[in-house]
Amino acid sequence: MNKKVKAKKAIDEFQQQGFDLYTTTINVTEFFMGLYKVREASVAELEKLKDFFFTLHPFGVDYDTSLVAGKLFASMLKGNAIGWRDTFIAAIVLQHGNTIVTSNAEHFKRVPGLSVVEYS
Image (cartoon, rainbow, N blue to C red):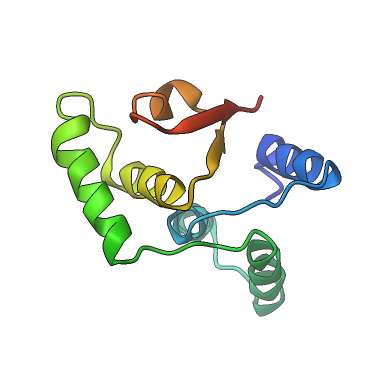
């Protein structure tokens, strides 16, 4: 998280304000993809990261989310796709009736019905 200073700051601020925060297993995967591109994490680091991500109550992909993501990717976003990983993230957020907090609001604003808040 050291290189994700803006994201960590936004998380800390929302938690201090008493918001319940969530993430997706897709976001967790993206984080670890980036980490492992750079280096191998120690067991202690992995445990610390695991504990951190559990505080964000990660939602996974289920059957219904897969249907929403498939529909988004194939039809609603046709010609204006945001990529399959972000499509799944958007579908998870839609399925749970949450708002996505992102540094890439313009990207996610393309998804119909998705509530988007940008942090900087």
